[in-house]
Amino acid sequence: MANKQRVVVGLSGGVDSAVSAHLLKQQGYEVIGIFMKNWEDDDNGEYCSSNIDFVDAAAVADVIGIEIEHVNFAAEYKDRVFAEFLREYQAGRTPNPDILCNAEIKFKAFLDHAMRLGAEKIATGHYARVRLNELTGKHELLKGLDPLKDQSYFLHRLNQAQLSKTLFPVGELPKTEVRRIAAKIGLPNAKKKDSTGICFIGERPFRDFLNRYIAKEPGPIKDPNGRTIGQHVGMSFYTLGQRQGLGIGGIKKGSDPRSKAKRREDGSDLSLIPASPGDADGGMHLPWFVARKDMEKNTLWVVQGHDHPWLLSPSLRAEDLSWVAGEAPLLTDIAAKTRYRQADAPCTLQTDATGITLHFTEPQWAVTPGQSAVLYDGEVCLGGGVITTEAANAPA
Image 1 (spheres, rainbow, N blue to C red):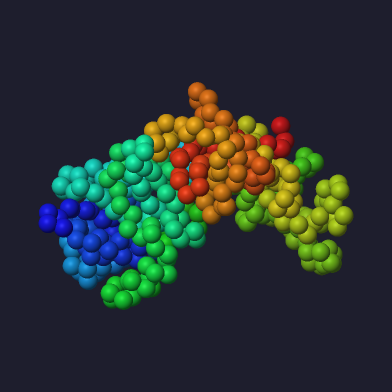
Image 2: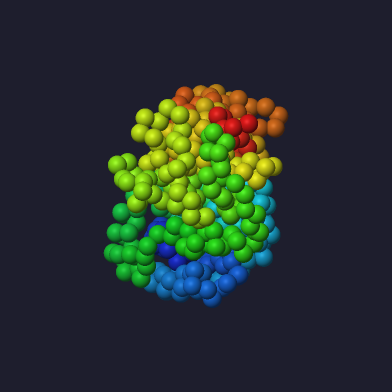
């Protein structure tokens, strides 16, 4: 292009953003890399990888032949994302900080900084796409073409102003092709493992991290019959559908309860607790799942079996809405995800002055307050809201 457009790329140290920068340079853009530092607590701890990530990002910039700048957004992150994250957990909900981080940091603080550098666009390594709808004149957020990597769920709060300034270069590619390109051009992070931790927490034990900021307030764990079968360490440390880390368990089918029964922390034999009525095998070999959090009574309710009715919700309520087009869709028959890595679930949409209600064709598993319900019309992400209801059949 004769007059090169300046694009500022968020270089995280990972392979996706690295290949994004390479592709943009190949397309003729003037590319500048920005490494965002969003977390400073325990900066030198074993779980904080920001220093290593910056070294990787700088090495990538050197290979591609672009400038890179280190920018600190830790103050903005703590104020806009982490404070809200703690408020939600203290209220017993399960927030998704990656969604808030995208809306407040990567596509707000970072976007503003890039514009001050004279950029016309920003780019990230997200697996999503942006398309201008010529009929409506509005930008649409589309799913990434790799169904296993699509990240539109995490981007659903982006608005028209943000999308109009955003490029997602790897959104058209499968992950295998991204890694092939990285290896072909000799990127040092071509085989780097994908990050799976929450953006500021990293790959650390989550409960240990949360315990540093939220006080423990133990209380009873109860089964559907109201029997106390254990003790939780604090309601903030559990989420609906959780199976691991409950401190309770059953015995495997066919085992001898006299010798192999699992025990609670107080040493009592869990096999002595009667099974739920109607369970032909006694039920004690089935795993336990968190079904409800009663914050008022500080009681954690658990059920046995993945498909227990208390874990299934035919509908949900969501508020704090954000629509990509700037207004609620006119469609009533759509699809939604109530959590990432979930297949689109057909549903009907009802809107009102304060939120939306979704009615699903098939009940949804472990609908969790604090998580996001994200709506889709085929490959188009419409937006969504924060879930406020728990599983419909949980105890009153």
